[in-house]
Length: 192
Image 1 (cartoon, rainbow, N blue to C red):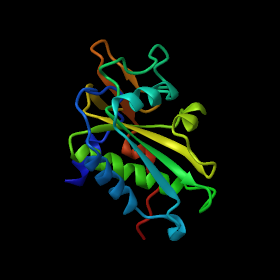
Image 2: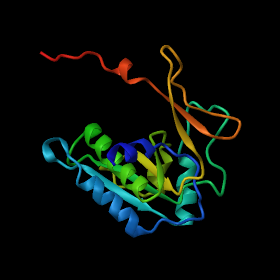
Image 3: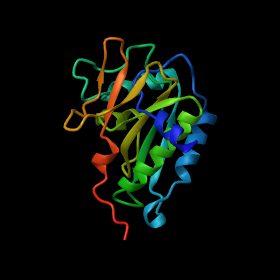
């Protein structure tokens, strides 16, 4: 059921690093992104697929992991992603792709979840990643999606009215994500 798939598609930040993700799976996930809608049908997004331990190790230091978790600098060795999909904007085709990027990356994460994988969109990226990937000038990094078999539990919590939306981890390492209640996000109802 679609609701269940969406509900279990969370941002995972700790993975079973030793469980590889093959290129065939990464191709499938990018195919799901390719099928997504695109503003004016320009299709300016491109992707780099990364799944080798050596290049994974070169990518990892260029990523920021969880802004709200001030005492955590990211996953330890053994819990790092098994693969990455780097989302690029081809600036020869368009100067922006925010709408396209959201739709495409949600398709990727839903597809990953369906395959028993987890992922995390990462927008905190150091400029040095462009050099690691040896990108042409017309390719701009928009996001990196970290992927792997989840090695953590992520729970949705119903936020109490007026409560905090900051995600957090409990003493057992369970990641909690407060969600605003439905009645708080519906701004109006017009039935006549």
